[in-house]
Image (cartoon, rainbow, N blue to C red; front, top):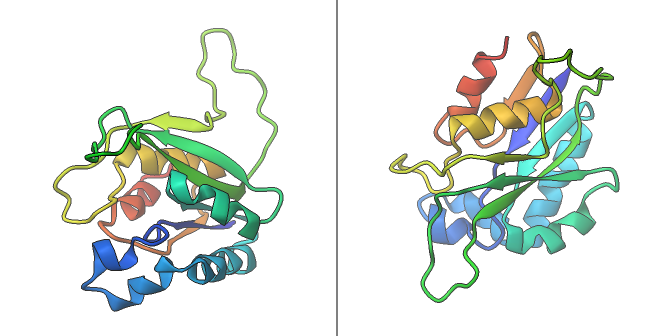
Length: 171
């Protein structure tokens, strides 16, 4: 199977955080995100996931097919912004498809193999890239899509390379 993960500059944040990459400015527009969502649907029918900001979710969801789901990355340690209340302490992950085998309940005392639709993981500090995702987050996204050995996973915005490292560790 073939999957994708997209962590684009969040809506209206491209120039602000990635000014040294002029191509990021396209994501300051809703049209830029619409084109990305269309690419995900067309090129990755097996499944995909895309990170977003909570404040852009109401604008992005109408651009998505009706069968997407929303998962949450909950950040117990997060950045507080002066004058912003409440704090931005979670981020949505829009996802679609994935390998959906029927998972029987685990044996008594066994480990469940179905992931939750949320993960609790701290932000990454001093990565050199705004919005870098922690290893636990990357592994969780792979679990949401039920990526298995032999699957192809494309990271459309490789950034720090953390997602690619998580893909390499799929066993």
